Amino acid sequence: SNTEIWFAGIMSRPSFDQNSLQLLGVKYVGKFIPIEDENDTQLEKRINNYIEQYPFLQYLDHSVPFELPYEYHRGPDQFQRFFFVVSRVKRDFPRVYVIGDADGLGQDEIKWSMDATLSDDGNHISTPNYSYPVYQTAKIVSYEPEKISITAKATAKSHLVLSDIYHPFWEAYVNGQKVEIMPVFHIFRGVQIEKGIHRVTFRLKVPWFYETVGLSIAFFLLGIFFLIEKGGANKRLSL
Image 1 (cartoon, helix red, strand yellow):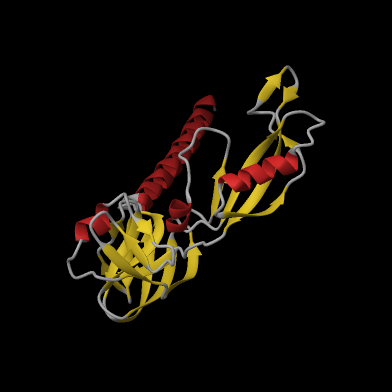
Image 2 (cartoon, one colour; image 1 turned 45 degrees about the vertical axis):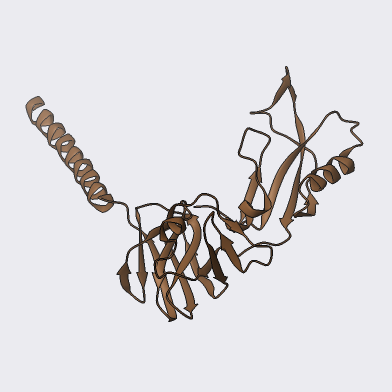
């Protein structure tokens, strides 16, 4: 699952833009800015250049200088020093929302399009062939690693979208009834909801997890039993 914080390291990574961060539900971005030497007086300029490069970010704060000795070597006993800069996405987007038009129009693009674009006002998401209305009428009630509870309101048949990564190990329940979970825009989780107010729950269920744990415990206890029996048998033979 993704988080509300995007770590922009200096290692190779996909570039990020405002649309991607908004659809991912990212609110904060952190980035390392290297210090060239101990007398580096260009920190303010470096920060300004970084923010100018990404005008959709708002600078918040930066750390004191620090080293990463296990990753960035400049020579024997010499390590690269950094400032860590934190910024906020100026127009962040909710991690959960409702999109309309779930009556069959553009269903394949809702599921599989990798070219979704959020409008400037945040009221529509467009794919190459369709535009879907967006309603910010959903709210995350509780968020745990293996269970997410959401309340949502729909004025017509719609899709509830959670901007967490889709995976078949997740199950979805609407008002306590298990429903089909579907990918939305190729990577997010979604379910269809009818008109009305709903409580939606996503649960992670790893196949054979409890069975595997049970077998592991059984074999562990069996191993201890054999060790005890073997120790008792050796003691009896020595007598």
